[in-house]
Length: 490
Image 1 (tube, helix red, strand yellow):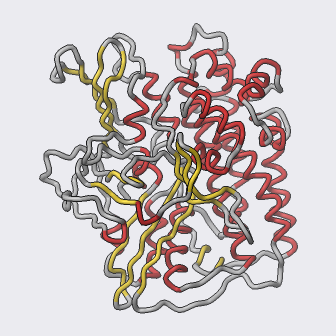
Image 2 (tube, rainbow, N blue to C red):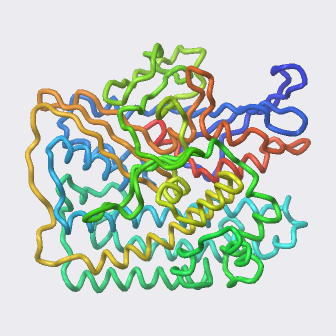
Image 3 (cartoon, helix red, strand yellow):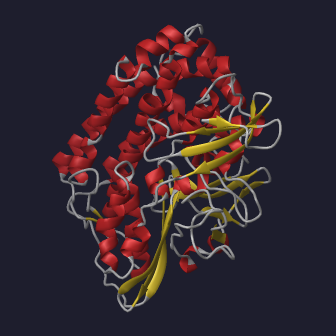
């Protein structure tokens, strides 16, 4: 839908809802001279899980929070368990930590595969690209519901989810992850089954997605190496994407602020697999958790006078608000918007290829997609190692007791990025529960200073062809963030 109600010389275009997105999403664009001049991102559905949790037994969070989403249910479960563990001062057993890593990683890798094959790549199999030299291959591999790569990816995803059957009992909405570890252990036979499952997934990715060993993908270190892979590397869908990215210049599309946040993923005995911290154009640094605040200025929420730290936050919807344009709050760190996701994890962790791409060209559609694929390889390699670290017969879950008062934050990494649950317990009940999901960071509205959220900034400059009602460049940028709107509004 478009109109001329914007400034003179500017056309307004409302895009949405988007297909292949978890939840409702609407983007209002202001266009001039064939490009986006400003973007306003709206989450039009309010769900209110934070309010549902108030007044309940804190342990109810393990049952209710995972039901926020059917895609990243395990991540929500993990964040809730970590918050409860923090209130109890409880650390998981070694087996519990490793098994939890496997459970969370399974969901995240499955999400990466689904995003690439089912959500992102089918856009390039549309008729508008029929004149491109790569189109016949993309159409055969990725045409929605028909492409051979799509069908194979869903089979591989199903195989991977067997890990959750063995360790978590079911997916989604498992209760296996607890504050002290996991509810079910694995015996020697389960270890063999887990190793065989991951081996089958490895073979599928090496044959179809990458055309090479996972280790070769994980070790890519420069933009020049990536260009050589595109020019003469092994055949696979990774190389096909690189052809598309070069042809459509996706390395220059969708740049936001190049500020990245990660809470660190997959704890180890000494350090996590992926480091915790921030990365900005000024360099790397630590995350100051006290500097996180949620701004309600353009959210349809009460308490707009100042930003709130999540421990002091509230979720009080104001249905009569006429100034806010989203149900999503605007989280900020040190007053600034930050992008999160696989690209943020790899930037913070120092993966050399992703840093080279971002530092030479800026964060982009290319950077986000390549980061997801490189992370897929790195994570699956780690999962194979974790299976060997499981010790049948050793404890799987530490026990603790809930105090009547306390507060803690459960911080984890979902596939889409930094996920935090902030829990306050008073008189044995949940007095406050605030959630900042990855898409809340990435799809936030403007804050009180008028600073756009990361997606809003990334859309500025996107080309819009004459007559387009759903601009294809806008779709590519939106999908590169892989929005989950039901998590955003909980």
